[in-house]
Length: 124
Ligand SMILES: [Zn+2]
Ligand SMILES: [Zn+2]
Image (tube, rainbow, N blue to C red):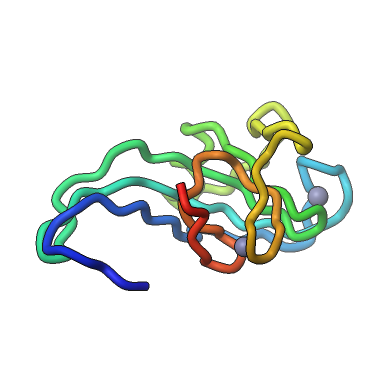
């Protein structure tokens, strides 16, 4: 990824947890999902100075969905606690209305700047 300029705003999305052989809270099948954390940060010379707008997402492998996760559930998972994610903890955009990645055509939450599946820019 290229950075131009000595300061600016970047979006960072990273995986903080991964669960295997669990019941997928999106489609109800046995599957696998990852928990992602996304935030924006302001940097000077690539040193992050502050962060805001932290959000958590669940990325399922069984049904290829990315849904927003409740903030308190996400921070519990980030703190290393085992949490069972229920259907009411996740907020999926309407599949038909969700934007899709131009590169790999994964359905994505509108908040993403980079595709969490293939890393390509979504051009927002
Ligand atoms: Zn699923
Ligand atoms: Zn993609």
